[in-house]
Length: 396
Image (cartoon, rainbow, N blue to C red):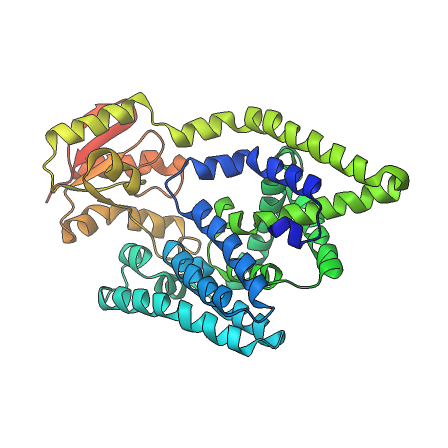
């Protein structure tokens, strides 16, 4: 329905859906426990309902607001929609629809915000803020000196992700250039169809990613995937129409089919090792998880690089160890932050530390793992060891 709203006929829409279905990035999101894919699918329903509300219908506006609230509970990153959707409806002179949308979505946002605020600890500890307060985390790490540089870096990352998420073959050569071309296609498509709710939300969403003080992740672009695919397809149709006027539609369909199949074959071949690494644990990690289940008390707390994975395998609570403004810290400051880990853990009743096959708590990158391991070795004995994987008892 979304692709049809952009003016594509059923054959083109089918090919674009096939291109998305064969994309390894999308498949990886579908096999994870994160909410990104579910939230992206929910947004498509919201945009379809908002499109119907532009005719003055009441129920679609209310239902769109309720589903927006549900999407917000999945990912607070959809917050720009609470501003862009009413503004768009007001621009289309649908004031009642804008009011109904806000009235049905705002309770979800208000209830969750109130609950989170009521249970939010009063602290500036980077790790605690990282887990409990998105806005506080942004303000804690924001700096006017760094902001312009980070914004430029984030724009480059988004261009790269647009290329990788639309045609996975772009990941093999200059994905940022491909992404820039496809976003040009999005702009050209907007000239043909006019601005839609999807376009306006995408603008607000991308601005949020640009000003965020961290590098955005590839999965953050999943809500934008239909729009990027549509821009890619429209640009391709324009190019093939210019080169082959007589058979532009057939040529565009053929090109889409070739790219979809190539994306499945070469994309998986190029990134199969990465997908396997993220979707499975090493034998040492599995042995460590089994040891923790059998030997650590149920209320044991650990510090680890991937606390969510550890909890799912062992049922033991875990936390990461986050630095403050890691992109400003000098090597000596990073070393000091690393040495403070045992004391930080003791203050929070954390008695154990876990090093997986790649990272230890206290390491910002894999190359720093030996340094973090040395700190843990000084603090307490290794209760379990299997190659690089280890469980340490932190001295009180």
